Length: 311
Image 1 (cartoon, rainbow, N blue to C red):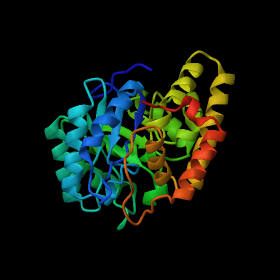
Image 2: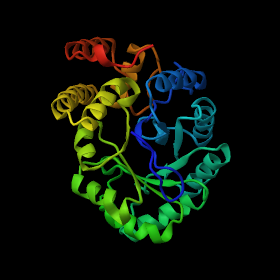
Image 3: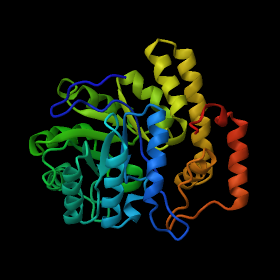
């Protein structure tokens, strides 16, 4: 996948993992482990990272922890890996502070969810909230993080972009973690493809590619990037049979993840491939030994360890 020119910076394309935040046994952030995560991701040909989002447990971290994590990723990611820092927070002032920090350290861009306790009642209210955050980092592309399953905010993104384009000068695009493929496709084509639309449902990446997606953010790219590179390569070569077969493999993997509590299972997989990111923070609960052994067996059954990332 190649880059294409956007309104401010080249669009991010290719695979953009959403890294897990590594934790020590006492629950503190293990910054040193980020170096190993970055080494693994660079070796697997990713084009960026989306830091402190859902997979990174960003909403369970303090502002200072999030700043430290962003700094470390920016320091170790390398010139070819774009660091997008998720700065979403229930307090817009704190979100703005995180955005300003991301610009200060030289990140590629910022992403933010909409307020999800006192939720916006209209697209205009959502845009106003995002505009306040984006204004704190005017030199960076600002992405709206559309994840209705977590935020409950369900406005069509084509409506959001039409309004936000007039209100947010540094609007970059949307991290689109939703299943509404019609809305996603309309966003891709809006204003001649102006906006960088990063697709966020790993299990249906092939569907997004068929609509014109060129970039994707996902948690499973942390440990299954080789499989998704195969999907993209096969699609680009017109080999839909191979692309479909590998997408089916990804679906089986994601189904197992869902059955073992998603993010929690993802962190367990990181330890299986030699990049142990520790446990999760409450209210999430770590896998028991029996669950760990069970998911390992399930992944082995579907051939995961034949295509996964590994040192």
